[in-house]
Image 1 (cartoon, rainbow, N blue to C red):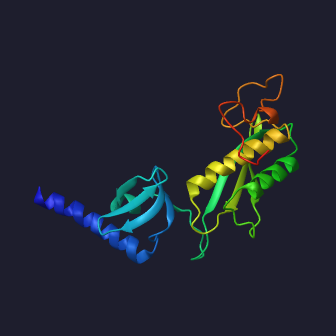
Image 2: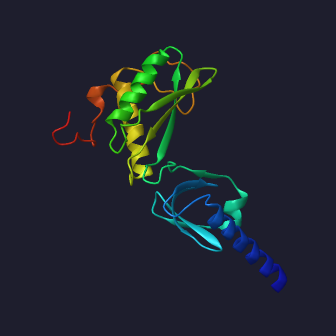
Image 3: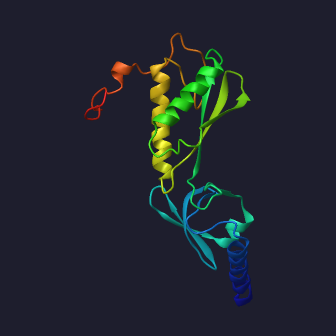
Length: 199
């Protein structure tokens, strides 16, 4: 039992050395590993600690980190922000150029976006009922990934409602008779309230 336990500890320790010296990730990076996404707060000899968007501390054994896929969401520059990517599916009856323009508008309205780097819109797939689009933006340094993602999704909903375009994410079964949108006059239906001084 002592031998088997020592082997497990040595495996985690060796994995820790690999992480530290390969510089696959650093303290302060925002990563996605397995089902966990968050800020790397510590890389120890046996485990790596990640602070999630819920402000939970998740401890992941280094052997699990090394053996799995690590997605580093932090930009390559040392002082740069995080790359944020969101997806949406829109029907073929909406011109793709309009979709690109609306996604870019949603990005420009969001707080914490580095607008010196133009938002990028990609068409990922031509599916049976709709087209899958992807919007990629760069966040300002020290900007919260979870907060920026939430605001960006909110802006996307608002912009698409403004232009009467139906969002078909995450699934689509049947084409309804009318567009499924929220009219602007109903954006702040009680108990929601408009921001002070806002429209």
